[in-house]
Image (cartoon, rainbow, N blue to C red):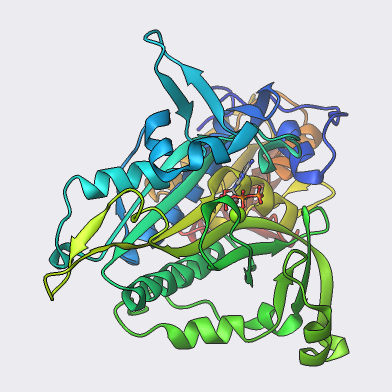
Length: 439
Ligand code: ATP
Ligand code: MG
């Protein structure tokens, strides 16, 4: 992409309404724009990050046995009356009436709808297990939308729903999702800590929240430092194997949010030098809730013994749009965002220091074409801005690499390659720089 054709409305001033760094940087970098309280337009730069996060989530869900579908954002109120949640959900639910006076709602979550889809076609234990997911916008009329995309009213969530024949199989699926979540966040460059959690309106009694440590997080959290050093399960992990050892390893060190924190246990289990007391951002949550929905909604399957029983269910959410903010909270400096490689909106920023110079242009085009052909998705700054302004924008938008090409260097046959995360610079021939970038 050439910057001259792209749409990157960066802001010079820091927006006064933004209280936390990720919100400020997303606005300044032209990633999104607020259209109403807690409702955002995703501008091209932000959308590219959102799509990269979606891609990681999709790949890891598919690997772990998930099957993608897409449910609508609007749902019938009657469906929620079947589970009894229509009245329980309260003011967070956006209720809508259509032209026929039919009561509808903008889905805050999809347990009811997926249960309805499941029961319409699945009858036998032979068709299980099933783990269905979608990546779809949700609406929750939050009392206090704030911190940009971190607590929006409209937000993008990956939500998966599992159906198993009995509790043991349901818990094995829960373990698969738990393991997949470790990989999802790990690939995004995040250390997300699974913490035992309350289940809230989703229900059930087995649940973990995945929490990224950050001073600006909304919940107070307490954990053992040991959890930060645990290994992320590898890509070739066997999801058909017993995953209990991984779950035990990750849940052995103390880790809890304030809702379920037990100070006495924390102190007895964790040596003082390993105790971390800080704040955290919830980037996902997994639940096992058995027959909470399948029983009232009669989603039953016939077992091997010929007896009908409600399917055993779980649900698994990832805050896809919140993650954009959470990654920035975890990875930035004074100059701007530092994108981890896998989520970066572009792989390399090519900075043309003098677009009026024929040789510089030729070298930039050569680099741009080679990087494009190698799938490195370059963003080339071909604008007439002065160099200082170009460097500031590159640092602000945080692409992993910057390839700086100017007349002075070219005369000596060299360009400059900068790694955004470390600030490390190398001066080298263009061909070597391209090789270092994998092009
Ligand atoms: P919270 O406690 O932050 O309100 P929740 O526990 O109600 O979230 P879940 O039902 O567990 O949310 O939803 C799954 C994920 O969706 C959460 O872990 C979070 O990452 C994300 N999420 C929830 N509410 C919002 C929101 N208002 N804005 C952005 N992301 C959200
Ligand atoms: Mg939650």
